[in-house]
Image (cartoon, rainbow, N blue to C red; front, side):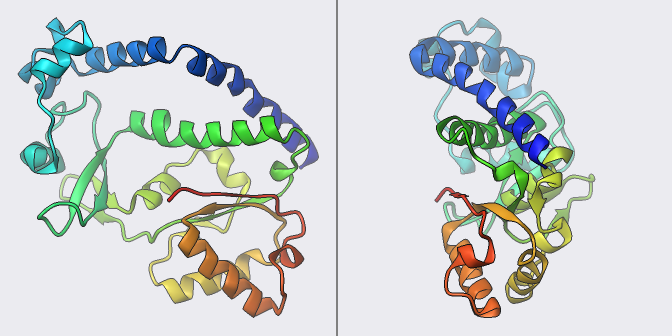
Length: 251
């Protein structure tokens, strides 16, 4: 695992140069991404609706394309849910993140493309690791395991073989194979539905692992850590995982 730690740490640090360029030339980077997205969407139904092919500036985009909320595009999303493609995005949409609380609907379904997973969620995670490895060059986090606490599986299937569920579950279902080598617990445990059984199973599966890093929602992770301490009789979490270095979280 020492060799793996060295290799992965080196790979992560290589991203720093690109990130520094982003910070140095933010407007150029934004302009490049704007161009890529307009070109990607030009032949979709949405792109044809607002004539993306003739849009060359941000001002043209702002003047032509209205600000839309979920209710405004619900009908388009429903069509995608029922199997139609190339409406909002050119590649096939097979995953939908189920959310609630911000519209009149009980639940809303956010289309998740393969490009979104790769260029947003997964790249964001790699950038987070890159910053940490750059700031702490002696890190040993890849010598052990990362304990990732996600949402429940609860994956549903539409009639057209597309799926919906918690965003965290979708992310964990689609993680690159190499990530599973350095994470714990097994997906069958990490994505369990019932919370009480889940934290008990995670605790049993990880207390004897060499956990070096944590990732997850702070409130959920705090409950898990308290349960781990109660179960093991320890007073400090580093007594359970002595090589624990860092907690990555959002929220």
